[in-house]
Image (tube, rainbow, N blue to C red; front, side, top):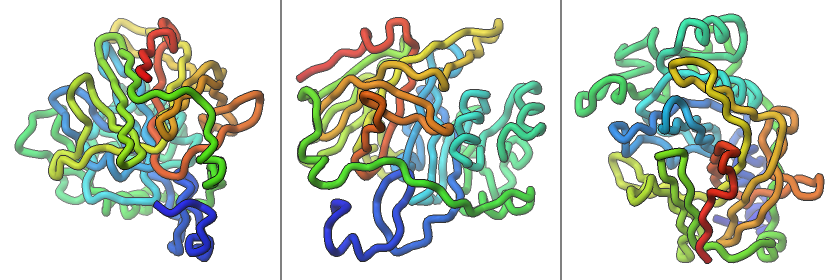
Length: 311
């Protein structure tokens, strides 16, 4: 990856808003946010290596779910796709993304139909061979796959905009990257209740590799590892609101966070500014390293105190 101030890269006139990487391509295609299953029967997943940014948050019980934001790259297929949650579709709407999921409780579907976000529910296109297909090597609800090429066509049919102008997030330049603050951290791990997550820094690629416990997060068909330039771990309130175990997750109030970049970790804060979750230190945004970012939202009990850091 060329650094932002490389003379050759500066000839590229556009910047992808979620990755900070330069391009001579148009960057006005609308962000697509896809709900991706993280049940053990759904792993390995497909398409996550192409996501610019991924939010990982608890759904019910001890299982997390991903919301993958695609803009700079568009995979052929994404999945398995799972159901909607308010804290996810509210975040998708804040990022002005098309929100793609498969299934929802009636009250959630009513909220989306009422205008909470521009949405595409795979339950209405189940195994239609165009937008969604059911894989025969897995069983429902772990086998619904989005055919990404059809997303914008279906969005147009629903009357949604498929282009948008985005302000880029804050990114570091080459000099700033070389002087990143923080302590050395070769490995960071924590638990979503019973779901363990681990990030290991790979010096050869200067990126983070993700694991569910000892199981590396890779692409299903190619076994390509998920490689990340930023890992952003933030703590916040999680409240169970019904007998089904559904949660409310506070993504507005801000709080403490860890930011992992280039083998270092720094304790900072997170804030919601104009709907986007960003790292902040002493009131000023902290830049991301250009590239891909994973945002882990963890309950504030135990919160960052439950994060294990290995130097």
